[in-house]
Length: 166
Image 1 (cartoon, one colour):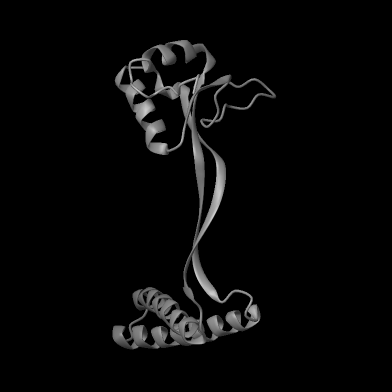
Image 2 (spheres, helix red, strand yellow; image 1 turned 45 degrees about the vertical axis):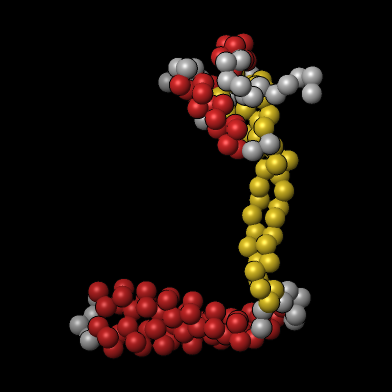
């Protein structure tokens, strides 16, 4: 039975977290947690938090009317085939007839929709890209009641704790 006004704690929160260490890459933070797990430390009292977020956009190519048209046709084609397979489950018509007709309609719709969408951009974004948000620092947090033990254990892992005098 829960107490009125109190909500269950989130699994993504610690009650009183303390910083154990800050690393430049995720692998080092993961290595620290793995080392503590191997030492039978209660790792459910730890968190790895990515900080100093950075958005990276990698430009993959130039957009042209032809690329937009081909992309629209292909995405519409796949969607049409998917719809055709679903229709085929509920009809007694020839499977290939259903698949070909829905694939054609999907490709046509995909072509038209892609070209209209590109026309509305009016050349404001004539390139394709892939975007990712990454952290530049990774901080390992520990529940305060376990901080001393975690630091003691990590003293045995070379390079696990940053040099406070550096």
